Length: 163
Image (tube, helix red, strand yellow):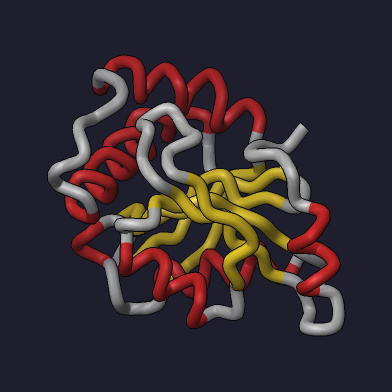
């Protein structure tokens, strides 16, 4: 099946919130949810779709994944478990890389598949924490930049979120 990338629509917030929850629960089943499904839907409607550049990956007419970015940051990159390991995440990541000179993102350290995915795509560890996040879960800051600038960019990263 081909992967088609397109911009998100305002009416997709509920579908993105559900995909987010499904993906996160599958990747880390023992991590308790931080919010209710209603709170997730409100967050995606009022914050994600309103504040970030959100791209959807479709396979066979279904939403297979999405990537939400701000300048220099990947805020969310999630792939539906039914569509993992077929290039959906790579397609979304390539699109984000194609419009930025450098990128940073956070992921949980125990999400080993995500860590391997980002490292396989040229992201490098810039910093780790022991749980400086809402979930109090150890995490890792990854950065990507063309090789000649990767170290300088990693050294300038100081905040968790874009301004």
